[in-house]
Length: 63
Image (cartoon, rainbow, N blue to C red; front, side):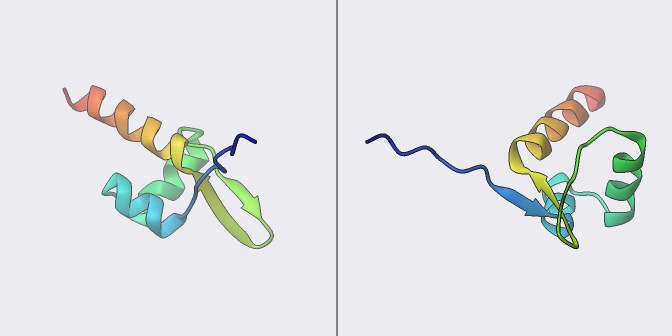
């Protein structure tokens, strides 16, 4: 039987640290639709693949 890997979820703090930005900046990016959060009960989570994609987009803008 083949094991499928579950998606990794990141908290706001983890996502902001990974992107090297402030949580307030992350909230602004969410409001602008630049990164998609998911609500899990009272918590906001981000898919790791979306955070990595956002990091790649910000690298392209800086280059």
